[in-house]
Image (cartoon, rainbow, N blue to C red; front, side, top):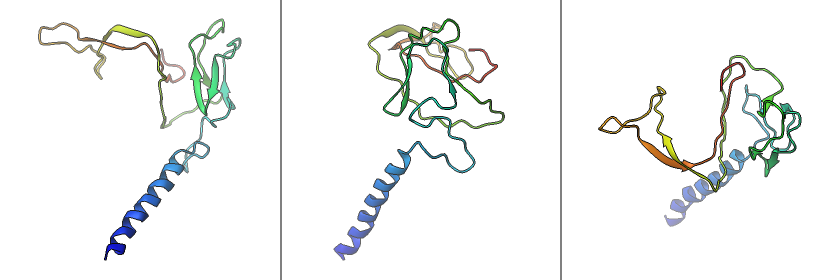
Length: 139
């Protein structure tokens, strides 16, 4: 009886290990999707002219140090334009030594969260910033 109880546990462990390996792959998009980043280089991306290497790939992840030497737009753009789309992103913000001590909590409607006395609630957060902008919309 003990062997029969162990079999589902062993099977679950094998399934978990296999699934973990599958989710770690970034070189294959699910059917019907287009992979935007290959994990190796900026193929199909436009790096700003004169950037000076501040946009780079580190351990399969796009990294930016916010020090681009490009004269104008410092953003990274896809070479191709996309119409109606769903975007699925794995996102990571790297650790920063700087703290912004005065950031309002922004609610989904864009207004700032307030306390019981009507004053804006402000918090301290790591001073790191990033975003995804759809071409043609303001930043």
